Image 1 (tube, rainbow, N blue to C red):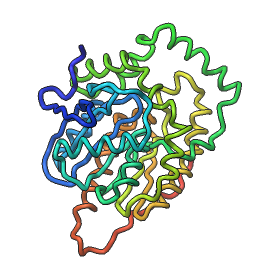
Image 2 (cartoon, one colour):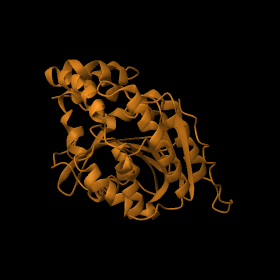
Image 3 (cartoon, rainbow, N blue to C red):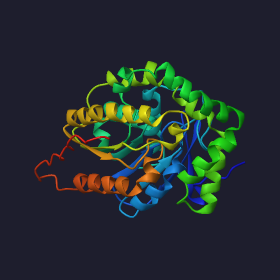
Image 4 (cartoon, rainbow, N blue to C red):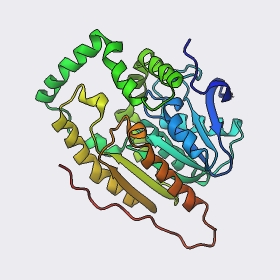
Length: 313
């Protein structure tokens, strides 16, 4: 059994009959709560979690069916995951409103939480989130699919040998024990990514697209405009850059559609590794959101500057 990266400071709470693992650090509010990307777990964000705990309460957790939480059938609807997170925070007596951090698929879950419970949200940070604009992106061409084939074959033949170097680089800055445990977990549970994203395009993205507006709270979106190391093993650099070129205008439009939204481009961060490539940018964004959330109620509303269009090469 792989030891949880939460160690002795981890907690377990029962929500809807399932045991959910979490860790809280720090004190004060508003609490920062992390929603991992597909196949990722709360321990993957310990670097940012520890840093932001110096400024407020910080919470990382594992969704049901992932990490060290109880098992459940995957995939799930965004509403189910959002309601589960709300139940966990209530069971653990973590008071709101919250600054929610959503990475990739976790971004869709965080957005659904904010749609369903707007009064419980003090700020939003999206890390290269899943977005409904992806529904309109063209599928890979036959040529691109043929380029993917060798990488897929290598991964199928030697999954652990194929992915271990990628995860080792991803967690290179983590303490040895945590790095080893997280790498071993991901090599064992890699199918979770496929399971969690099975209905992303057919159900989750349409659900959030029709789920309503976001609350009037400071919102920052960090866009990973670099190459994802987990995708370069399967896709050409040209194809991945084309995806980045298409998603940036969609992210800008999404930020502009929120009352206090801002998009920031990170040219040196990959989609899966944005939190380990640029933890400084994530921490700064959270500190910015905390500063706005803590301003006196009588102060005039500050609308965050929206980033200009970024020249892509």
